[in-house]
Amino acid sequence: MLYDDNPTLVGIPKEIDENRQGEALFWEDARSGSTAGGKRFYIESYGCQMNFSDSEIVASVLAEEGFSPTRFMEESDLILINTCSIREKAEETVRKRLRMFDLEKRRRPGVLVGVLGCMAERLKKKFLEEEKLVDIVVGPDAYRDLPKLIAGAEDGEKGINVFLSREETYADISPLRLDSNGVSAFISIMRGCDNMCSFCVVPYTRGRERSRDAFSIVAEAAQLFEQGYREVTLLGQNVDSYKWQNPENGHVVSFAELLEMTALVHPGLRVRFSTSHPKDMTDEVLHIMARHENICNYIHLPVQSGNSRILDLMNRTYDREWYLGRIEAIERILPDCAISSDIITGFCTETEEEHRDTLSMMERANYSMSYMFAYSERPGTPAAKKYEDDVPEEVKKRRLNEVIRLQNQISLRHNLADVGKTFRVLIEGDSKRSDQEFKGRNSQNKMIVFPKQPGLKPGDYVNVLVKSATGATLLGEMC
Ligand code: 5AD
Ligand code: SF4
Image (tube, rainbow, N blue to C red; front, side, top):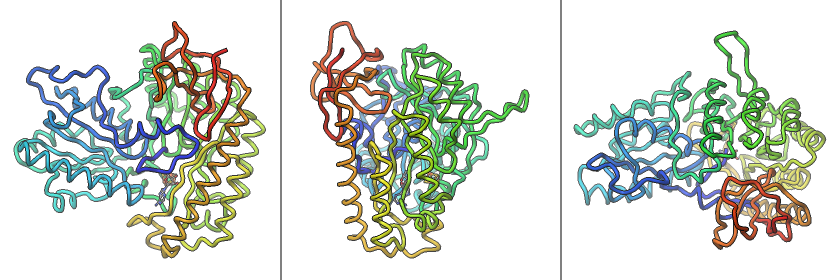
């Protein structure tokens, strides 16, 4: 997944990064005061794309109860924060925001504050006990219970539901697209994670892995296309292990099959997916990608470390050679495919030589971009229980800087290799810099900026010739 407690992004345009920074989400057409006398909610989301997608489920649940969204915290009756626990920094950011919300509560008694998502799940009752400012605590599988918890809180009862489900996929809830560009949307295809990477808190905060009804996913994609959307991203912690059994005939739909079903919705609908796990990514998925032009040539395939001993300690269940084999398969079957990664520096006991294995892996895999992090011990994870967090902070940071510097070079080289090439670009909107320019992405997920021409609008496809490049963006002209 793509995470956002200020991850260090390289090779991705700043504007995308900024768009994900703890956003207040709202409907594009929401107008202040549109619900004469009705209640309003304000929601901020942090962390991975799954959280942003969950906020759209929450919005849908609240809309059923007559709540309407507002982009202004000052006019809301209910303030919600969808939280992330992946690293300590993510939690610190949320605590800072809660202190802001407390000031608002003091100004306007009666306003309710709710904590949703991974931090709610991890800290459970502690939130209500320690942070007196919070009225409602709701884990990722309990959003259907929000109306009841809100009603209780209005009567002065603190509300909590952090029950983790083995079945909940919210398949029947049609997400309300918040803050959408009207062109790209996320579709959640599964929830939870069964992988147990030793550093990761996700299996504890999001529970067991379960896959959503394949037909409800395809129906959502078709509906989005009808509404004018031209790109969907299928979301899961580990999409390759998607597995849904059709109760009608017992047939088990794999991720490769789901990908193909979604691609067949319409050739004009681009399909992306995230995140792939190196141990599960099959050649079959790669062949399906090769067969359908509208499945984008881009794979986010986190390596975490380039060293086999560290990968073993991380419980990633593959080694360096296996990962290199996956890279070779992508290069063989999808020669134009861009690959990106997640990297952790300074995991328990990592030596300089092992760190250098990560650097050489980055060179070999030729990542178009990476999300890079210093290891942050999370309470209760296998790594926290079994290993000493013994790499000094300054060493972690120095290694992280080396990784970032190298990724910057590789991203620039990757982008410069595109100069002179023509790409099919899906227009997403105006570029950040100028309303005379459009921005859009190519199949490889690279942002391209180019001068506008009359008659074109977001959602249109155009061919763009790349004229120049920076490490983050391609600049071109329509041709
Ligand atoms: N410390 C640092 N980075 C982490 N990630 C997950 N857990 C931790 C942690 N404890 C990173 C991994 C993962 C990404 C979403 O966040 O790289 O792929
Ligand atoms: Fe965490 Fe590993 Fe699951 Fe990703 S695959 S969410 S890193 S446990």
